[in-house]
Image (cartoon, rainbow, N blue to C red; front, side, top):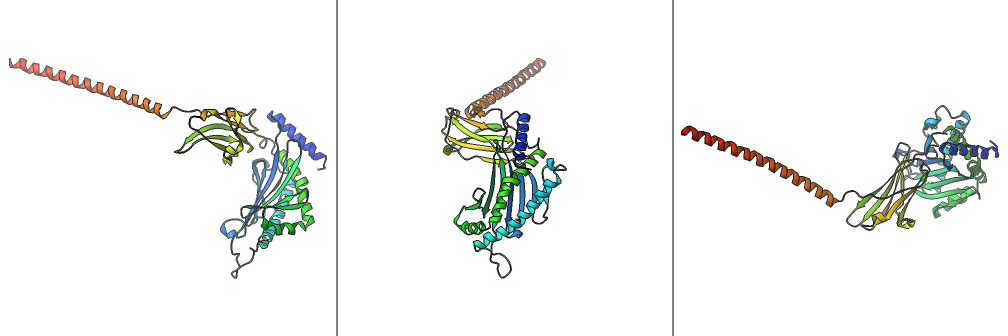
Length: 356
């Protein structure tokens, strides 16, 4: 695909999305996540890869099988042989690259020495995320990052063909990789050219399932502890993943520092949930409202906490019902006793009459 054809195809996809959904076009992304452990016998693989279009898993790969597996129903029987061959070749190449990079990083950390028994002294992990994003304005952005033992480590910068070290220990690897200019150019070629092309093809194949937008169900809940009153705004069962949740006080947005960070978690059915908590003074709950923006909403949604019946009122109602029941039972008992007394009096009169 030529450089002129790519923006044209992207514009066509975005126009179709807008026409189908009746909403402005949104950005799309293609992401690959790599992970592995230096000691696979601990349960983690030597290399495993997962590929996502937007938020949907569409391909997986592992070092043992060395095969790319389709994970999205919209890919079954529809992916062209050329596209799938290219994806498979990329994953096999990244498998080899990942293991080489893993040993390089461990060696630069003096962690690759093998014991006398032929085993590494301890286990380490390496994570990589790479891919690209197509924005609403047709521009693209590539990203390629490494994480080592759960910490940010290195990030490739395609504009300058160099690496940014996220920690001092990564400086040795940074300098070593920057000597290899061919690798840097190959990385940039994938991020700027191959990745957007693959994403465009995948968006065409997944048109429909990938374009669905499920609006969130929003609810504000109230939680009271011995020392704190908390309002929690929950957004449930929405897709895609990108969502904005903000708190307002007296219809004015609060600073982000006053709000606990949100968590966006998958539900397991392809949708997501998120929540944002806010500590408030008791009695001032009604001054706060939750503002939610999502691609599935025609306009932002605002929700507030709706207090239920107070504990005192509920107790009073239950007490009243209990009193009524007791009175009712006493009335029944009184009638039963009265009838017994009447029947006893009649029997006595009858016996006396016989005696006479």
